[in-house]
Image (cartoon, helix red, strand yellow):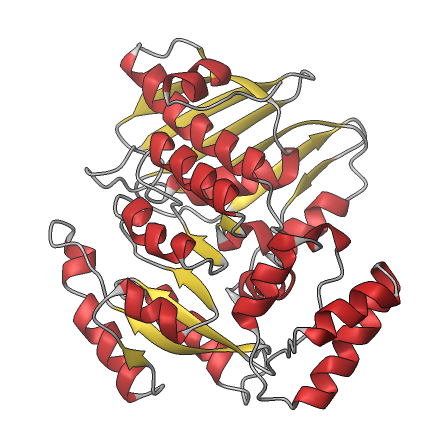
Amino acid sequence: MDLPADCTLMGAGFFTWLASISRSRRGVAEARKSLHRFFCEVSGLAMAALALGAGIALAADLRIGMIGLDTSHVVAFTQLLNDPARSNHVAGGRVVAAYPGGSQDIESSRTRVDGYTRELRDKWGVRIVDTIEALCEAVDVVMLESVDGRPHLEQVKPVIRARKPVFIDKPMAGSLRDVIAIQRLAREHGVPCFSSSSLRYYPGLIELKKAPAGEVRGAVSTGPCPVEPHHPDLFWYGIHAVEALYAVLGPGCEQVTRATTPNAEVVTGVWKDGRFGTMIGLREGAAPYRVTVYGSKAVVDQKPGGDYGPLVREVMQFFQTGVAPVSPEETLELFAFMEGADESKRQGGKPVRIADVIRNAGGEPAK
């Protein structure tokens, strides 16, 4: 396992994180040598001696636990992590335990959780546990995968109490208020935590961000947008297109407006520097994921294609370093963008200020 390269992890929070993932499977001597080199580089021999005196050793593979076996992501991610024969295998950890969860009032959860649980247990040898507390005792890090965002806050609480770094699959929660609560808990306990859609790391989107379009004036992101009645309209599937939009533009949206037709949602944000960002969510028919960037020199389209591999690699790097690749502030804002879109719809398409949406949910808007 690679050692943390970011010295901001130093101090009590770092040692708590390091101790939580420490196992001597790779051999104490080798782990101590690696740790010694790291501390010498960032803090000198005195810090290295302190850590080595504590007898800390690092594992060859992180033990990964999963919460919520009601989404196809759990099978896809486990294949990437546990099968070294795959061409896109992600090294550094293995899924070793899982808590099934499931939501009885969502059909796609209720009808799939048993099948995915059996597959992880029987095909991949994953231990199935009865409680999240038992899961935390058996693993080093956690992937919270429940397809239903509503229970995420309660499901992540024992993970944070156990001080396990946690990746929360989309949506991070079932409401902006819960997103704020999760981020606050993670911050107060010093637990690394982040959430993201896989679209953020699609190769075509990464390439698009580097395209010679000149000064970016705005972007349009399209994708499917079926709704689920227990979630805000864009949280269920529209979040993918919103995440891709933010991957290109970054945070800084000040207001959002929404127009709704029987088969589409059109949500436009205005950024504080004058850029625009539009998300078009399609309910029926062809709805490929695609971002178009409008620049001062060119208009550039995202190339199609992508899979879960790049996201899982980002998650593994996050687990190894404790450094989130997406800032909490950006995640907070993109959820406020989506809740603001619902508020705009309730107000007949009027503009809604992002700062007001965050404030009304109990958060602190960016200054």
